[in-house]
Length: 75
Image (cartoon, one colour):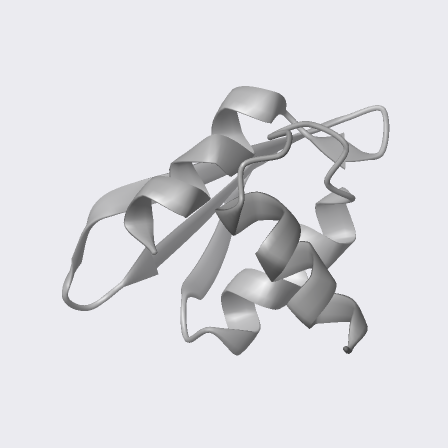
């Protein structure tokens, strides 16, 4: 299983919405077809057909827990 498949599985099984490396989460969202824009320290991901906007912030090298949980809701 590849690196991003493991990140995806980790988020989708909701073992924990913390401890998701920020860069890995950003790459995963981009690979899944989300468009990324950055405003200050907010990395905003959108996709046509998905109403929820994913707003991720960096905290100690990880995506903030409440933010990565929104990814699981969208997918």
